[in-house]
Image (tube, rainbow, N blue to C red):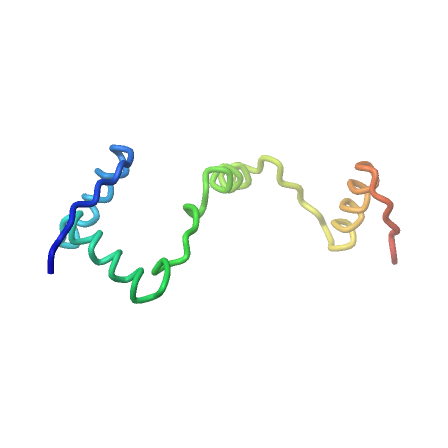
Length: 100
């Protein structure tokens, strides 16, 4: 089967990081791209669901802050917690009714 060249522009860091992963798997960038293209054809689309890195920077920051107690409130009971939520909603202008 005849082959053709495909030219792809990516950031240097992306290429370097991907090559390191493929090297650990015993393959070259070209071999990995051939596998990717074949799997696209076999699956009739992308062979995976694209997603962002999990957790992202915002989530990591929130986890770190909560571990340090920043922005963390402690409630004695569920009732106390719900009362606090109702109060915050009222302060933000929401029309909420408290049920006992």
